[in-house]
Image (cartoon, rainbow, N blue to C red; front, side, top):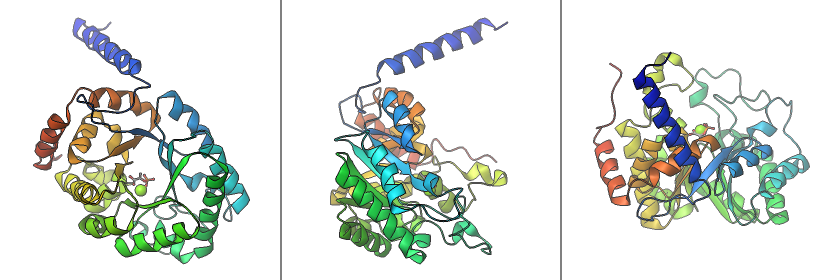
Length: 319
Ligand code: PEP
Ligand code: MG
């Protein structure tokens, strides 16, 4: 028994969704034509189906943990090569960003993650884990290089939890030694934002993981309900960190993308465009709404909105 107002709202939402659906297949861009490629976050090779269905222009984040979780030892090079080849072969000529294993903290793996860490989010995770378990790192890079050689996709490879230019340079060197063409870093630890100009000198690209960047900027565990209020990339401190990275990237000609949940919020996507981010990657079902919202703002309007957001205009603390 909906009220007339509820009916009106439902009709409006349906019309909005139909309009957004009709734009599927168009490349991501703002109203004035400024391009902003829209990519998909995927967790296993079969997710390529929904990425393509929703009109993703490629993959901006392939989380490789699925190959490792539930096993008692790392998957073989052959097993990994097969999985990466399966994904890459779905995107000939298109960009596919694969993230190295992010073990630790909210993604613990019994055979890699220490059990006695008092603060796992501040312990061994991401690239830190891979450095300790060097063979796992080597094997994953080897599998990626083999899959790259066997397919036509434009493969980009990145490491999670890179803290600074030294860690970025370490990982880039290993990736290049394997023959990978584009090797970059995820920006999730706030320190990387503070030295972003240095990182831009050594990395081919940076992808901002706003889930972790928010967690660490605000020192609030992303898995803890009691501090969930802090987990918002609308916080001006997070947006300012993103701006530092985008500015450094644009000054050095280094692509900067966003692949955290923030990219899936249509209003925030406009702000990210205004901050100078070069691509957005999100869960495929979010692509329609983000594409439609971007198309209703010019880059100038997005920059104005970003300015207001940096000033805290859209951030409403919960107390
Ligand atoms: C992030 O931290 O924003 C991210 C994309 O990585 P994950 O959510 O897998 O930690
Ligand atoms: Mg992360």
